[in-house]
Image (cartoon, rainbow, N blue to C red; front, side):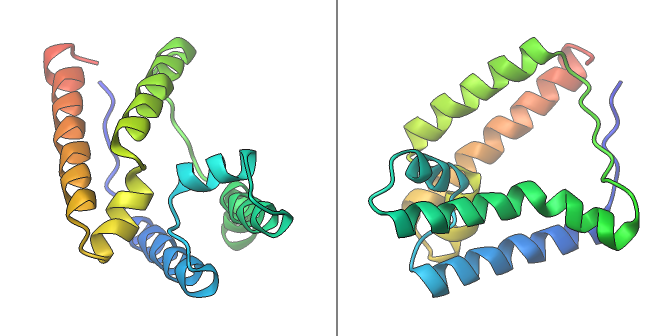
Length: 144
């Protein structure tokens, strides 16, 4: 059975960094820091400036483990206790959910709820309910 590690300090630091990036992105660019919206916008940008802004944001997300390496001297430990096929199927389901919800957890959960958007609050509640149900089924029904 896969056990989730309790890491309050690193979770707090990560949460602060996510919140700070969302606030800075809104303050400096007037845009919501929703990861899927940023990714979609880099694929079909309105301008070169927009492509550069979104690209730099994504680059920061990708290079964050290197910053972790510089600070701690080790790469972050990542465990993926499922098969590649399961991850692909999960990615497809997440993509469908993001499309239906008109945004992802970062856009709705971090930025939308901070703006008291009722749509984002409803979407985040839906994300959380589905997450709880998924974990329950995987761990307690299927025994994964």
